[in-house]
Length: 343
Image 1 (tube, rainbow, N blue to C red):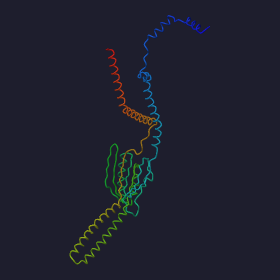
Image 2 (image 1 turned 180 degrees about the vertical axis):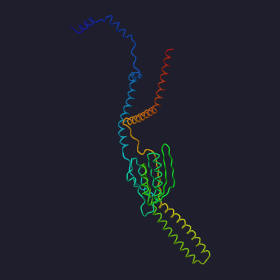
Image 3 (image 1 turned 90 degrees about the vertical axis):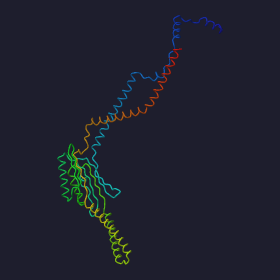
Image 4 (image 1 turned 90 degrees about the horizontal axis):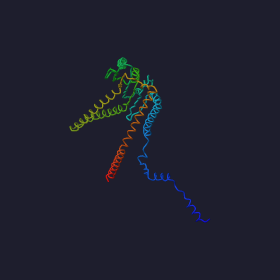
């Protein structure tokens, strides 16, 4: 059989579609083509997912805040239990030695009470500042009276006293005692309450006094030389010149004597500033672990809210621009639809 015969047989046996199949094909062909999804539809989240995302973000923020609060609560408790710093010593550029060290312990250590005193045999300016805490106003009154008695017992005196009571009483005293007994005064005053703060400053004045003494000797020698020259002077103008120089030297001598007396007076007495309070001396109790965790969690939530607000402020201009572009496109699309409908 040839190829042509085979082709003729195939054409003669061509299948024919049924009427039902023809009707179905015509129905499908006449249906409008499905519209392609818009970009807005592509990125639109399902309604359930749109409600779930904000709730999940809020829950994650709360859980992280609570976890951080629980982990940080133990750190806060350990920091509250750290003992206070002891007295430290430092030297200032002016040559003064300063001793300071705040304390919140229930009982001051011996190193804090035994404050350094002036060096024996040297002229020094000594000043101390004590901050003590007492239990109540009755203890405040008693401590104030004892401080005055200590100053008198050490041959000192009171410069000023300020005393006030109320919900929280306070007293401020300025005392002057002999420098040789300054260390003893600080030690005895420290026993009046619990040490909250303590500082001592010592500035050496011996070099200044030695310099003033050398200058005084020089002026005395100069005045003696001028007196000898006056005894030998013969002319009136020469005597007048020598008298003027001697008067200037004597004035400088009086000024130096006054300066030396003032410097020596500063070295003879020490100034002690005492402050008494009825406030709590120690740090506040850290509270339960739950309270600390809640406090830390609230703090973390506050910081998260601040971060979200900052991000919102940063993205606000972009959101406004996007909203403006969307509104412009929507208005233009409506105009095009209205124009097509009218035509």
